Image 1 (cartoon, rainbow, N blue to C red):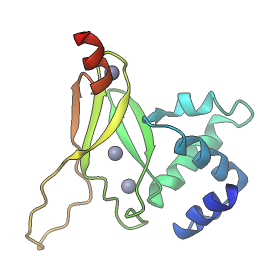
Image 2 (image 1 turned 30 degrees about the vertical axis):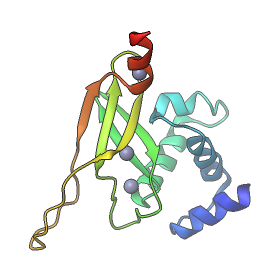
Image 3 (image 1 turned 30 degrees about the horizontal axis):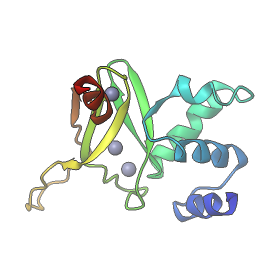
Length: 140
Ligand SMILES: [Zn+2]
Ligand SMILES: [Zn+2]
Ligand SMILES: [Zn+2]
């Protein structure tokens, strides 16, 4: 299993240190975006700075993308298309007011302009509402 993660990190030009493998493995198991504190609480032996640096490296290498949510930054894994040069996570990030979870909504993407004479490095699309699960529960 760790062999796969090692390979994933190598594919993204990232040296697979044991800390990076652990953080990647943890994020891989999450369906939702996680804040630094949430990630930290799973790694009680590692200090916050190390985890923070790992996440920053991941972000630079196109492994995770971050979501700004009020005053918190949350992290979630990217797809394979992202790399060191560009993130291609051009989809909606959705915050549920009931379960307070943030997820990627990839069926809701930002339309891309055909014009090539400018370069967009970052677009943020953030929505708040009630997620599928909470909505279902509220109807029962
Ligand atoms: Zn990305
Ligand atoms: Zn919800
Ligand atoms: Zn996303």
